[in-house]
Image (cartoon, rainbow over all chains, first blue to last red; front, top):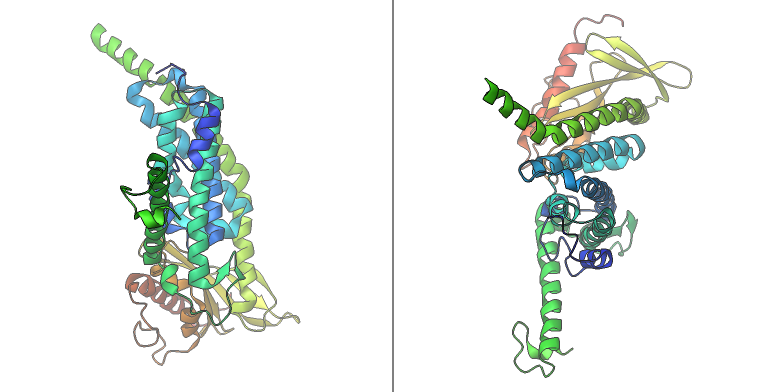
Length: 224
Length: 184
């Protein structure tokens, strides 16, 4: 457990953004992904809150990693995460009041966001604070990327605006379903499918430069 | 006896980290709350006073007073003439308390506006109680003096409990305040 081997800070950072994206690759933390992406502003605020909690919790846990005992480690993780989440909740209420109102119960729910507990277990409890910080920022940015993409797609299609500014002509028939809960599933499913298609196309091309027997994607589309 | 003591010591040793952390986190959160809660309360207060001109037509400023129904804001126009009242009340929604502001005429028998201050209803369903179109229905005075869901106020489909909670809270406020007109 104390062997400091494993991915370097740079690897941790890069992996979090796309190769091991917490949302698109690990499918973790889907509750906020589906719940707060009706508008880009709330998605980005949520991501910022998660990034802050993830960074603080990862560094703290990495600092006390030698004191952790296997049977109480999850409780310790949860305790530290809950502390930082409550702090964020208070700070948002004091300084970003409209946003804290908009996010409502989803802010305290960051406590049960499994991305954070997963990073504490996988990285912070095994590696140095530097690794943990790089990991937290990488995973946090990956989470931001996912929430931002989904929030932008849903807000543009559902309300015709982006960050509250109108981007589509008034004639655009607003797809209200996109900002309602089912819209989150549609948008997330399609984004995930697109990313998976892209990925298998790239893998197929790398494994098999002449795209005749690609495994997961039609050869004609894999080559374009 | 000695064995029990040893066991107790072992448990304490194992959970020492947890105990220390709980203490540190508890104390720091207490301090943060002490520091930040006045600001959070001020934000909420500012939201209430900011809504008053919209809830009571013609009013520009307000003063907080006490009434039989708890704190109430008296709304005045530029010449300091009473234009109406704004009463903060709370109802029990589907997922938690719903806090709302009710604007009333000076005689407190009619509703001039309703605004949802805080709610934690299901997004997309119950959260539609915050929509101005729905809340505007309260401006039409019900014939019976009480609002009935489905007749005076449209029930929101998929959000019966949330819409009923708002209607009940408004009716309750009217009941409390419409008693013999005592000045307060």
